[in-house]
Length: 311
Image (cartoon, rainbow, N blue to C red; front, side, top):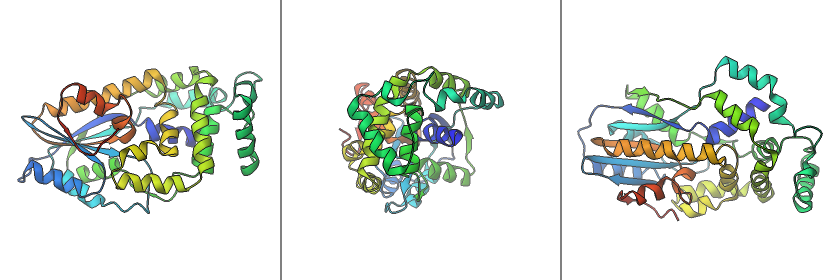
């Protein structure tokens, strides 16, 4: 279960470092590629430069199957692009797996003999007790982060009955077009596990609060998030309780990792903007549209950004 929950957190937000793929130059215009990508229904932004265009596809993970978007249009656009940027998974070694096994208690349980009430105020503990009763669970000794993951993944079940994410679509389209995918240096599993192990329980309280709010709101927030994403209502997606919870949990909420993640994406997009041709980048929406996120940073650096309002 620990491995499953860590994969959810890492893939919900930690499969984070971009990778670059190059394809043959297509015999259609850059504007045609942009229009084709827009027809997919996913929210996207364009960054035009003197030498080319970068298309930023705002990705949410675990898109519900009920969300009526057209991934085939995105596939078509990728097939005509010159480059694609996608996230890469963190690099875990066999040694990292052993570290996880031997140090698992630091991830799954609260330290020493402490319990949830030692970290939560009365109102927070009462909310958690109500959820324990509803789902017949005992979260008293469990890590606050693992409790949050359990609420989102097993009780709210947000990752059930979903379809491919934008990254999956872009990667498969690039592979089908026989595009060589190169992966730059990624976060080491050892560094990620050390960061998580050293985080104090108090640092996960905002994550737990947001996970409780999303779970209390019920499954309607899952469908609404998909509908707002398809409608390109980015502020509504960002205000959705589920999206808020995913953004407030490790690793996104960790100050050090969060800053590195945003810096990696900005650097990758700036490099793509300096290239010729069209680049399609599938980027986590919360990284793009959050306050002070990648879109804000690109705008501050003078890039001309076209697309839906993000704030």
